[in-house]
Amino acid sequence: MKNPVCWVVLTGISIAFIQQGLPVRSQGESQSDNKQMDNITIRQGETLFLSCSQGDFVTHTAWLNRSSILYAGEDKWSVDPRVSLVTLNQDEFTIKIEDVDLTDEGQYICAVQTSSRPRTTSVHIIVQVPPKIVNLSKDLVVNEGSNVTLMCLANGKPEPAIVWRMISASDDSLSSDNEVLEIPFISRYRAGVYECTAANDIAVDTQTVELTVNFPPSVSDGRDVGVTLGQRGVLLCEADAVPEADFEWYRDDRRIFNGFDGIEIEDDGGLSKLTFFNVSEADYGNYSCVAINKLGSANTSIVLYGPGAVQDGNSGTSTVFTPTCLLLIVLLHLLLKF
Ligand SMILES: *[C@@H]1O[C@H](CO)[C@@H](O)[C@H](O)[C@H]1NC(C)=O
Ligand SMILES: *[C@@H]1O[C@H](CO)[C@@H](O)[C@H](O)[C@H]1NC(C)=O
Ligand SMILES: *[C@@H]1O[C@H](CO)[C@@H](O)[C@H](O)[C@H]1NC(C)=O
Ligand SMILES: *[C@@H]1O[C@H](CO)[C@@H](O)[C@H](O)[C@H]1NC(C)=O
Ligand SMILES: *[C@@H]1O[C@H](CO)[C@@H](O)[C@H](O)[C@H]1NC(C)=O
Ligand SMILES: *[C@@H]1O[C@H](CO)[C@@H](O)[C@H](O)[C@H]1NC(C)=O
Ligand SMILES: *[C@@H]1O[C@H](CO)[C@@H](O)[C@H](O)[C@H]1NC(C)=O
Image (cartoon, rainbow, N blue to C red):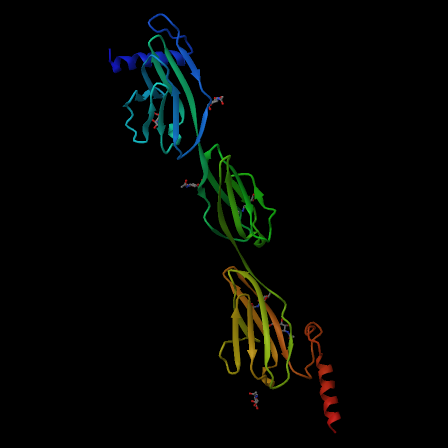
């Protein structure tokens, strides 16, 4: 009576009928008994237990994945090492599938042949996959005014929802509920770190993209500086630029370099500092600072003046003591000495 192949073929035929919703007859007598269990939802990577009840007079029993047999009684038919038998006794027939993957999704059927009639129990397995961002824009360097497109593609099941947002402090109004974030005519204020979040019922994946926006230098208006002879004098030049600006200093049309007699030029980020260690008469004059990066340049002029210098109306507004005032103080000082 033990003829598994024949029995399997019969079971296969029975199942084909079941799936067509037709009543299945065994030996032309009693009807089969088909049960649909609740769907089982499981996460990718977990272990799935498939269990069905047996009962008395069971002659054959099998677990099937779609139409292929995983186990026929104690005999393993599946070649998949992840599949193994857990329990087979009069009460239950349980197998397990380790490290479940998306391809394992689908209908599993427990087919039981009793002395009287066949019985099947089917269960639909749904595999969930945590979101994973698989294609993300690389960190980007663009020029101001470019149209920028950031892309974030993610896998997952259920299909993850994708959200883009800017996380740097300068502007958090920029976001998108989409795989694509488009920023037309990008401004320097939209440079920063952007975050893509892919979320579904089971988990969240987050990645960031850094966006650098290049722009040509702009230089703050120079503040004229009044210094008495023999004192230290410092001219400051401040520039805003990406990439950071290089600075050049000029006296009228003549370039001044660091290390010139009694002069030091120090650049620190967006700030350049020209220092006269000991201001002499010849140092008084009109200086200009030029800030340069690959996108352009900007300049401002700064006057270094001494006591008694006559200031143009259009500059020198920042000093606390006007030269005339300074002169008065000096004169007063001299008078008091006598
Ligand atoms: C089980 O899953 C299938 C396929 O996703 C679906 O069509 C069916 O409605 C689900 N049944 C239940 C009871 O959730
Ligand atoms: C179930 O069948 C599908 C399709 O043939 C296959 O890809 C998957 O690996 C099978 N799973 C198991 C656990 O046998
Ligand atoms: C990522 O997306 C871009 C744009 O759609 C495409 O050109 C590229 O081939 C994708 N890369 C991968 C690894 O999928
Ligand atoms: C940016 O997009 C606008 C339309 O949205 C287009 O007119 C313009 O030419 C684009 N600029 C660049 C540099 O591609
Ligand atoms: C500044 O220069 C003057 C003239 O060259 C010199 O007499 C004086 O000692 C210098 N002062 C300092 C502090 O170096
Ligand atoms: C300094 O020189 C610049 C040009 O090099 C000029 O535009 C500016 O008016 C000058 N400032 C003074 C106070 O002469
Ligand atoms: C300084 O800037 C003005 C415009 O703001 C420009 O005309 C001039 O050529 C610049 N000078 C230098 C030395 O770059």
